Length: 520
Image (cartoon, rainbow, N blue to C red; front, side, top):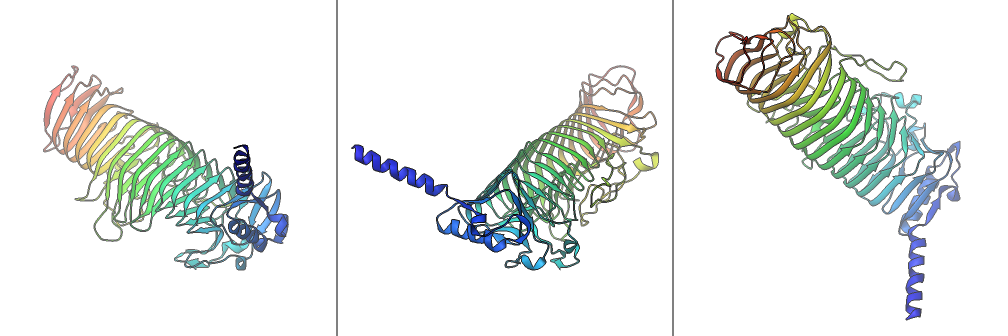
């Protein structure tokens, strides 16, 4: 019996040693001198590790220049704390694999792969060779630092990526992905997305920091697979474009996704963008506990159909516990190698669907927003156009008629405990809704100018239910309504309101209960 136990013990020890084999790239000829091109040596270490059944390919301290290396199943690429894996400045050192663009670290149809350690992957994107006009499918043909396609059980942990020559991390059609504690510092060229999740399922992103020249975290869909079962949490993002974005491409859509506990700051476009313009579906999305500071657009939601076919679907979205200040106050980081121009600060939040294809069941709850302000009487008379086929950005509609929320083509819109404020005097209403049905407004607290037309402006709206609202500033009208049907006002304090409803045509109060006095 003791012999059997001893044999099992020995087998266990051998298996542990085998499973944790380390393949130091310097043992295969690599040199961390910052000048030697180490592509073949690193690839030899990866190939040997994979042939032996898997293990760890070890990159010690030093600067290791390389072209394209291909990571294989059961291999972990580990970077020591002062190790730098740096992209070669020679385009000829990068492979254009199949129909893909150039890549520094490439993975395709592999299982159980990892990149980890406290070291750095440097895309070398600031080199003049990466400013080339060479194009691939209409975009610059510069290499991704990391591209992982059609692979499963993927783990990216602890390392830093900087100076990517294109999107920094691209995951396409992958399953069971864990991304944890990464730092992405990349403002060196255009198209410097931090992380792109394309048609992937079962993805966890946590504890990451992004400071990038394009979208920080971007979910995309190029086919009917879509992005599903995804969690993004405990991340910090600074961006020259959007903080966290669904789209622009969205063929297959986005379902069952939760985003929580994130900070987004100094961002040129929107902190949170949900857009469906390619016929797919956005469904069952929760966004919770987000802080935003000095972002231009804060929240932007758009349904469109730029391909000209049937519009997609955007429904069942819950956004809660959001604090955003300095909306519209972003200033360009002119110290960065790449930055874009500012947008007009008078653009509020847009939540806009398509005629006959409304967004459905959208809830904003416990939202505290501070805008730059500065809107004029001419601004509040502007209309939100349809613009269903344009490239979607928060600035699509120009200066918005309301300084706060601007909604069109929405069904079942719930606004619960919303606080709206501005910095510079603004004579626009706080909320503008047009072509919207079934609106529930509870506990609205909105700053309003005495020269504003009303706190809430409605046009072609039906089914308005307003409760527990108490305007804090004197205003001539609470509601400015044009063709509004079935307005119910219950349990509100309008003591600082001269009139409840502006006498514009075809607007009807259905029920009034629990009002204070001093109203007409």
